[in-house]
Length: 191
Image (cartoon, rainbow, N blue to C red; front, side, top):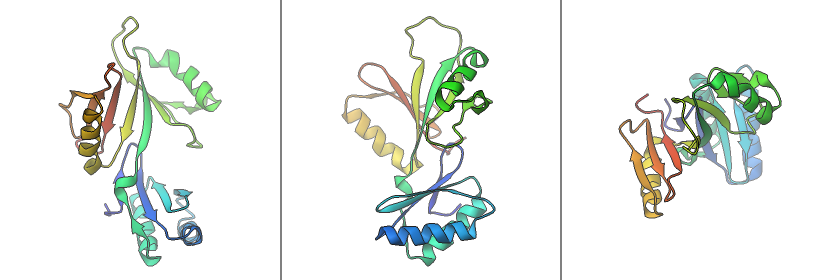
């Protein structure tokens, strides 16, 4: 895949740096005109344009448009946050979380609650054995470009955290804060 993009949880993500908001708007318009069949998700900020695509060919087409517009890619700036809930019975609780987070139980598919507007972080259900509280049930899954993870781990350790599981790195590494609350740093590598 193109060097501009990083595969995170469900899609390809890119950030392109812009000099002005107008430059960004022109780029977004060019993307909209070129990609009307496979519509990517686009977010225009003051200094960047973030683009998400599930289609690799569309992503490559967008990179070509960015190059034509003289934009600089910043692939290490992309990230995606998912919330994970450990449960022994996702069918029992999935519809509830879909209704609360999106307003519809239709958003519960497979092991996930996916907001069709992408305004709410994905919630996915991680299978576990039945257990009594207070074992941690929620944790964050932060999807990052693989080259960013070592620096994040170093920063987390310097801030008092610890690595609690890294047997499946680089696919994911589990860190814990000083009180034992966990976060998984996830990448597309090794999956």
